[in-house]
Amino acid sequence: AREKSGVGQYVDVALIESAFSFMEAYVPAYEKTGKLGMRTGSRLPDSAPNNLYPTRDGSYVQIAALADQVFKRLAAVMGQPALGTDPRFVEQRIRYQNVEVIDRIVADWTSAHDVDELEAILEKGDVPASRVYTMADIFKDPHYRARNMLVPTPDDDLGTVMLAGVVPKLSATPGRVRWAGHRTGQDTRAFLSETAQLSDAEIDRLVAAGIVFCDPKSEALRAGRVRN
Image 1 (cartoon, rainbow, N blue to C red):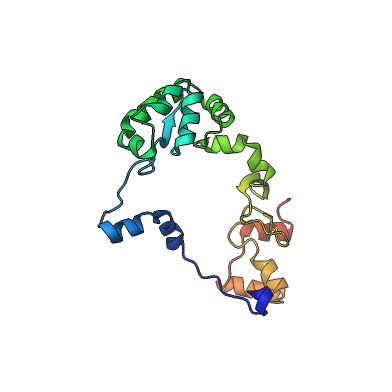
Image 2: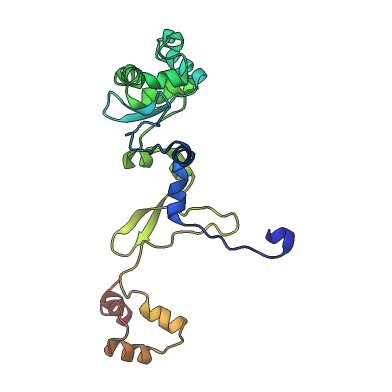
């Protein structure tokens, strides 16, 4: 709009609306049938198999094989191609009617493999799947580091601390993480001096009157009483 008219627009959005968008399917369902969407655990309603499945090494893998052709590919990599033509599982609608059975079959298979092995098998078989990441998984994943989502950041007390990177990434103003968060009052003197153009004496009077607060450690460093 700005490029076409020269006039920009406000962006007006609420977090509750972002969450509400995940309930899209329940809106017409309630309006037409009065059916209330309720908790279904880790399953996606009316879709099977589409769930979290346990792995041999104590993790979980999300497998989304709800489409008929994807389910047949899953059955093949599981070494059970006959599942793809089994009357109980041949179509998505029918599979969901037998969701407990198919989930148990898939879970028995995933439980016999470690998560790394499962991801490799499923990726090779073109079956959408992903482990449920722990923070340890994130730290090991090269994608997060390649995207600068794990940023070693200077910290006056800890030396460095790992922080999450900036989101979203803008081409012209990408943003950066400069420090991990300063102590209360650590920047008071510098801010008042540089921005408000106050002298040290004026700042001292404000501190003495309790109007502003300066971090004692920073003040000691400034006065030369503590070596950095």
